[in-house]
Length: 91
Image (cartoon, rainbow, N blue to C red):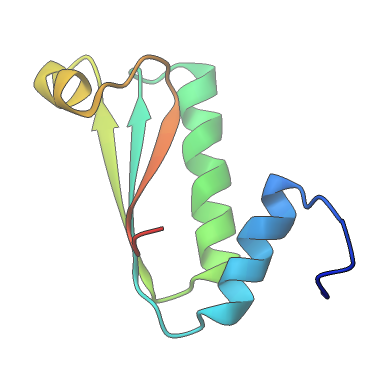
């Protein structure tokens, strides 16, 4: 992309662009869920599928159930679930 192009990228496009630029980086992700609700299960399935397709062998995924670890929700200021937080690499 050149400076003269004023193109707005979607979040997915930005994610894919970052992945292509960082083939060796290791990712640490946290997924906050609320028990075994349909939304929580679907979020977990989706992130596992994405990670296996794009980050195979280069990621750690920690799943945090807000009902079991309420202190984590407070310390991370989580206001909605499911929520995915990328710990590393830094932005």
